Image 1 (cartoon, helix red, strand yellow):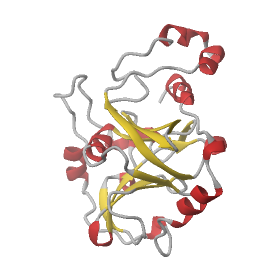
Image 2 (cartoon, rainbow, N blue to C red; image 1 turned 45 degrees about the vertical axis):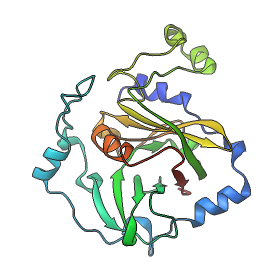
Image 3 (cartoon, rainbow, N blue to C red; image 1 turned 120 degrees about the vertical axis):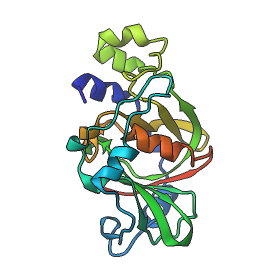
Image 4 (cartoon, helix red, strand yellow; image 1 turned 90 degrees about the vertical axis):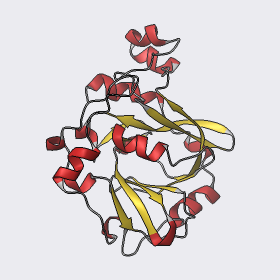
Length: 229
């Protein structure tokens, strides 16, 4: 990802003041997997050939999405179904920024695990939120502060049109707390080298192919738990 794309993500800064002590405790305790999230037993891992299919091009999208360059993606971040012990209800999204994973909780003690990029260390946050709205190929609008730091973004003050260069990509889930948008999202990226990295100012990114998979399963009002890193 270019520095420009990383800087554009600064619009999605967490509103830490909205995290109450209750939400922190709920977020920290809602999804623990002994002996640790990264150590959960796994099943159904992809082979390289299977990954080539799962992360292939998406020519039928409004803006055709290229295949993922698997040479730039650690196989541990391939999408896979894993054993996942948690008190969170099926359908909950659990984000583990310390290990660069996002989990979609399923029935029977399992989850689908996706490799993710996460906020940079100074922007890490934790607590609970929910999906307040969702969009396909959204418009992205920089904040006033961001335009102040980079005047070239002024041309997008009315919104950056959808497309592969748009920082939110093909699909986005907007995270809310107490009826208010946190300025944080779960978004899609076409840059595999960002997976397993801290790159944003509060948002979490999945590869476009993974984000489309998650998006289809995630209705508005889905609970999202962000664990401490």
